[in-house]
Length: 48
Image (cartoon, rainbow, N blue to C red; front, side, top):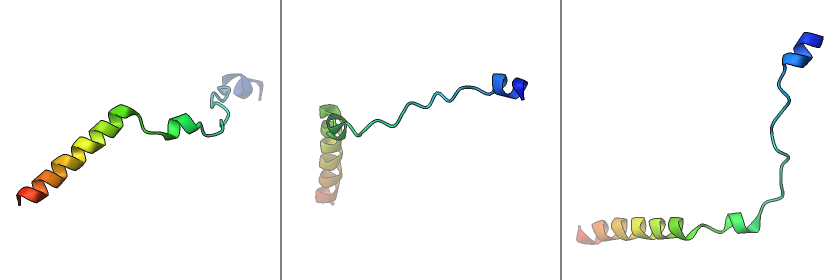
């Protein structure tokens, strides 16, 4: 038992933090990427 307890790694899982409202807001870069994707998809559909 002593060997197992010494070999078993201490759980490094961080405590569950309350959701950060700032993290829920998408970053400007991802917004631009999503916008460009939408434009590309919409443009290809319009061309057809």
